[in-house]
Length: 224
Image 1 (cartoon, helix red, strand yellow):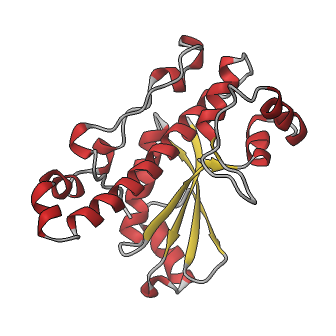
Image 2: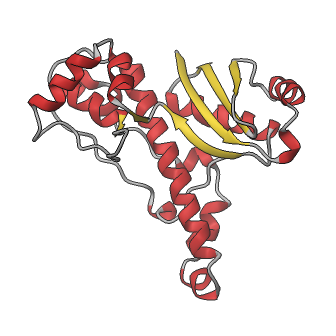
């Protein structure tokens, strides 16, 4: 199956030559990506990758990107944090109708993860909510949204773990698993996506529960 997703990276000074970077990406196996540049020092890689699962697609894409950009830092996996317009576009609904759902079900509609001038939700949360109300949601989109969210959780956990381990002798001594987690393979540390999230017809009424493996609770290694 084909999975569409995007990774956004912060580039090091060594990677600011975009033409050379694009060539290296192709050599590393990223010939299924569209390279987008905007702000200096940032790059977005939009993949359409064939794989058995979204997890396999994203892990292999991250590994390929890492080979081409070993000093780049992963900023975000997309789609995950989205506004109402993004959600509406993803499910083929108008923004007006999506807003009516949000307002009409204030107690059950997923809570946003950020409120301000722009309100953001985890796409997966809203997709599962819609699926539980018998809206037709593409299982591939569910799989991609679930895996993108986990990659972003892993990135944040890795940053927190690195901060704990680097804070001094106390952190390094009390959290030996942090060091071990950073040395582990990314594919083994991105949790499996629950079947109910990827195959909604099999368990439509249960919201998926998420947990990291105990060994990676503090830090999760993601390429880049």
